[in-house]
Length: 300
Image (cartoon, rainbow, N blue to C red; front, top):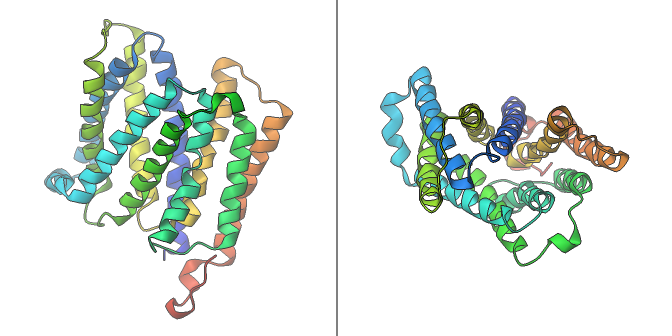
């Protein structure tokens, strides 16, 4: 089990990643006004590869690039590519609120899989905190019943894949740098997006939206690195719930960029999300895992 300090590092990394991803989504939304999906993702991936190589250079991890060929690292990249495929597929079939609500089930799925695979034990308090956070997400997003159909299964598959991806990250050896994992994943996702883009009519890239994609690439690369770091040597039952912080950032960006103001019901949902996170922090401070002896470990 991870120490309190390791879990705090994971929490900071996760909340940072969610903020970066949300800003990336805002830039992608702006870029999608000029480019079809496949071209937008392909262009962003091209910039992301450059950003990933720069991160490898800055961290001095060039000699460890061959470690990206390890089965677990490659497997994580394939799962990430499948996440992107199912998400984009569902995006064209379901309202965004419904997709977001379904994907936010991934922290609960991560905990379930972690327990079933005996990766770690998670007690009822943390599980309940995750459930409350998920309820808060549903209140904020308010997905419509009419928006759910068989296509929701595709979005659910994406949520399951996110859980598998994050648990796979946790099992990768510490000798493989996060920069190498991130770059390998980007390359595999890039191959998928290039295949999608080949079926579309591309538009001229000489426009301001390409700058948005370049910025989005830097954000998504840094966010991917943070997500990888968040699940390495940490307790998934502690870190996973902080994925819900994306809702707070999304609401803030919606207000700043598009002038969308949350109503009182949305604020109630936000309060549940924040309360869930604060309670998890409280449990970690009151009962730090590092103080538990192996023979007397109890789920928190």
